Length: 347
Image 1 (tube, one colour):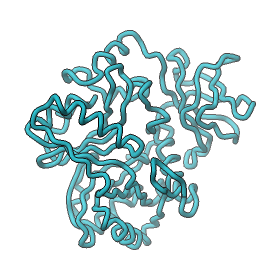
Image 2 (cartoon, helix red, strand yellow):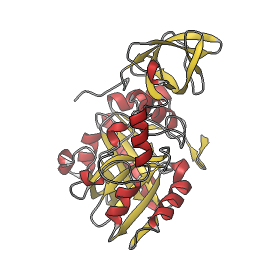
Image 3 (cartoon, helix red, strand yellow):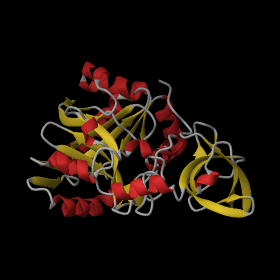
Image 4 (spheres, one colour):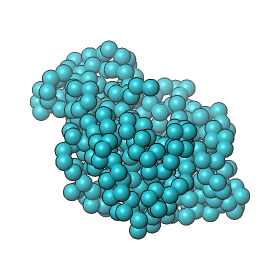
């Protein structure tokens, strides 16, 4: 158990390797109740949400859909990355645990310019469980009903699971199919036990922070405080697909347009590292004798079978196939720039 954003969180239950492979091959269950949840509603809720996020809210053409996006500072840095759900009558923001207080203040500050918009922080009363892996759909179908098969990626639904009121999105942070399930904090332990019992025949494993980190890294997914911060733009982090500069005005748009026109100061790359030594956050990345960047996240690629890392380097060092070096405890290990992500599920 470790402290994480003020929460006591499990690094592992059985082992990081066992949990990682369970999610890749069968199914894993994560308690991610440390995440924050905000509700945005009111007559101008749509206008407000469209103004504070970088993605285009209008892509959610009907209720019960979600998208990945960022909150961006006027200078182009990232306040946080998040998922926004369009529900019947309101919007649900799911934000990072370490940023709950900062995000809440940010949204309140900018909501003051939008009449008839109200914000509600439901983080303390809301638990969140993440069911991830190839067998996640079968288990949710068993627990919630056959309609699960028709729920699209980034779709949202509300139902009862074993008599427990819950809602969920077909979302996740592992690179696998799965669901993030919202439930009242008072019912969370009951739902956790129910899901673990129901998943025994499908090979379910309870999973901790360690596997959550190795899984998201293999899937090339950013972690705030590593690949994203207020000095780093979504464009630099390779998230341009989720930034819609042509949707109209939004916070940070002018800075992002300028950055795109003038060129990125730095660029996130994926590195496949030779040998057995593991790259870690902060390790220097070099081209020849010159340091050109540093590792933001690194680990063993448990499923892919080799050490992996993400790092920021100048755009000139960001092309596929380039050989760089990572300084691991005084030794330079060869690292090749490879396509993102390291792992992508079939289908």
